[in-house]
Length: 141
Image 1 (cartoon, rainbow, N blue to C red):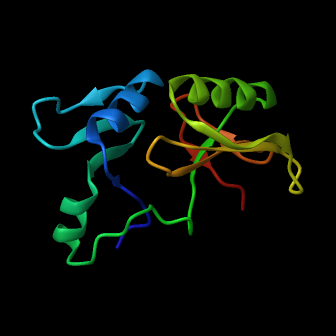
Image 2: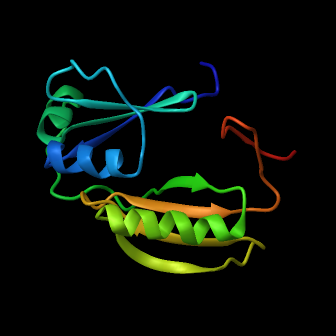
């Protein structure tokens, strides 16, 4: 198995609301003719929004009321100031700030928000991580 992710699917309770949130952030929606799912292109990765009950059925598991808090989705920025700007944009679009931006123990700057479905996002500037022009992340050795 190659070390990569192709698509992240979030199981949502309100597909229209979740889709509107990510569109309000300016994310490019793709495959618009697909019924019952929304797709977004994120550089070389795709994000899909799919009804939570359908996702559970597809995976053969019981439906859970809330998304897992055992992970966060992360968006790394090119500058410290961009962290504040992205958090503000997420809040305007309908997200809820769960942790305002602050200095991080690892030397960067970060904050967190929950999207309208409750999925946690970390917005971070890490001076040790390089972002290419297309937004792809290069981790140091």
